[in-house]
Amino acid sequence: MRRLAMAAKICISDGMTFTDNEGRMIIAIDGPAAAGKGTLSRQIAETYGFHHLDTGLTYRATAKALLDAGLPLDDEAVAERMALAVELAGLDRDVLSAHEIGEAASKIAVMPAVRRALVEAQRAFSKRLPGTVLDGRDIGTVVCPDAPVKLYVTASPEVRARRRHDEILSKGDSADFDAIFADVKKRDERDMGRADSPLKPADDAHLLDTSEMSIEAAFLAAKALVDAALTK
Image (cartoon, rainbow, N blue to C red):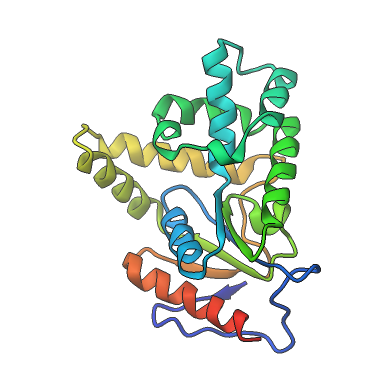
């Protein structure tokens, strides 16, 4: 794994290929919750005119469909049917960001059948031209292992909890930092410890630690890598 320094000095291996086997540009961005990968992914997609998919929303959309229909969250076959029916064009971040939907999504995300169904949809999305940016937990390792550009965006649990805490407060809601910190650590343990598609950086991913970086600094570091890829 390559590390991106705060000064955004990029080390690129000789002979590296920057399009997939069919000539598309795919940028895979993985990382734990609240590391900043979503914001970074949207910025990159907008900058280059690429299509963007927050793959976490596909799990949330599946969970919402189950909740809306009053269906159980522990029936894998039912959850799989809902996953197969998810429309990527209809993902509404504001609606799907509700806490109860996130809790439900965490329960179905460990189901192999659900993951298989959504991974297929995510792979189909990645083939869009002129290029795509996908962010999630297993893009570089499972969904798009041949992605030409892979980033693993992370930050310390304390920093990520503080960001989530501040985000909630900025919306006028109350927030308990200790509870959020505990939840961040719990999610990390669940994501990294699951048997199917655990959260981990791809061997050829570039590591971007945003613990002490501003949003702009993180974007410039990532952009330098993508720029280098596009000029090859």
